[in-house]
Length: 112
Image (cartoon, rainbow, N blue to C red; front, top):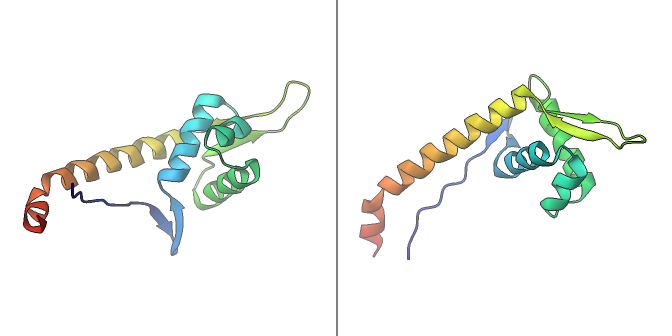
């Protein structure tokens, strides 16, 4: 079955900044309260997840994730209100794109 696929991300000066992967990481951090658990759930190394969070925070006007240092009770991670807003807006954009693509049945008909 033929399908139209569209990939979407946000760039900052030509560098991919925010897309499905970072969005998923923020969702996992929100759920888990921990960068290491979020990375583990995504089968991503902690180092890669940490670097991704650092890059997100550098490109955003305000931090999207606050990392708390470990200690006796361990550290943690928290998605900031700015991070929650970018997640919401990105997911709204993804929904709108999916709806638009779904409406484009003429192209698929021509390709059959």
